[in-house]
Image 1: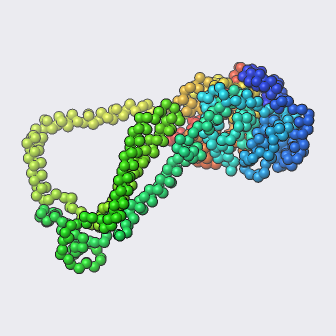
Image 2: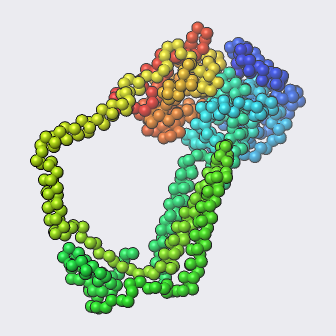
Image 3: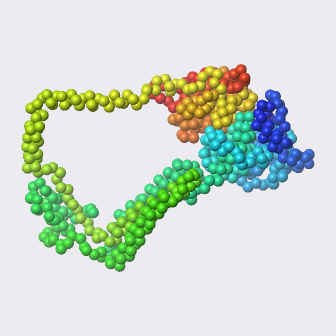
Length: 267
Length: 355
């Protein structure tokens, strides 16, 4: 779960944020400058009181046992104050929430709610403490993004956990960085913005929305590349390829050696 | 072919006349008394077979099938070789994917070419060639005494005729000429490069150098990096394209909430809970940036060295022997994050003179 307790602060000087955030969506960002200022957030289409009420009802039914009736958090689940609509949308649209098995890591699993219901819960959580909003489709559209910069940012800041081809990797104590194979551009954006579970946060002031789009474009481009050999081998690089070649090759050569030296039955 | 079924008298070329080296060790012939075996000698048979090896395989039908199979494999190998040439000439390599396809085609065709050839040869050997076990004794390596005496004589004569012994002037000047020639390579070794000096102890970080987010190369204010759990890779301003410098200067900064950072983190080197550590693992120098914001562990992907980012990147697991060096941080007049000095200890893996 996200560890964001403080609202994100927006600086007026971040033109790219304003251009892509405000101009593209109009509704998504209402920026408030100054230290400690609260960034209010809105869900796409603007949440109506009815949506928030509906979201609250879903929350009470399915989330409150761990996160508390007022999302204040319990021993079983963290507080959701200020995590924002983006965190809710990420967790619920990837099926991680509502959680089933409380293990080191919440696995991606089939989604149990409709997008509309998820957005209603997101609107409710957002109404409690603000936080990052769900990005619009235009903000996550990989078309026309700077792939080279996206690759540099990905290799520098993402690849150490998620693997250079987005195949995921192990962390400490059973945690793992998931593969990015099935992540939608929106989910990738939300993950960077909110830092789910052990993932660090890459806020818009550090990695701008335009750069996030570049990263998304890199991920979607790389994962669409074909595997000319026919096998991806997990896309974890020469290690598995070498392992398969070594183990498979050695086993094969052993059988070949046995076959060559096998005593021929004299007919 | 070798086997242990039969033992043959060892040959002894030095003592025997040369013409006796014709086959006198034949399957089934007796062991000599000198043979090193504990087995009882087989009954004496003084009979040479007509031929050493049978002319025809024992199973002609099987041999016919094997022959066809081997021929088919050789033709397959030939076709694969032609395919290799065709793939090399015909397949484009102008893009990554095209190159991957070309590599696949070249690899498969070459594997089939060599593989089919090898399998064919093995089948040929196994099913068409006769299977007879023979033991061949080692021949003595030493030359005969007569040959050795002749060589001695020739060598002495040659040495005398050359004048190497009789003409000391030539001999000594030749030796004098060869000594500096032998020393010359040692002088060339000098040009392998300068000694590292103190370069391992320093990076390009210095007082007032801004921290740039690597990639977009934008400077950061503490307020831009205000959410606890944030982490980003930074490089020194002006060196973002200097890979030699970045090999040592790569740094990660992490934001912590109030009270999260504890000793031995140097608090004077942090700004608003932002702490900077070297990105080069102190074990063998992998980029170490698997930062978990829940546990505050920095994990090295190479050998699982784990550092506690809240406690001065202390090693809590794995083979690294030293914490990641901490970079002293401050802000400049415009409020951007800057280094206030170089790292105070060498970054990266330990080295002999490090102390």
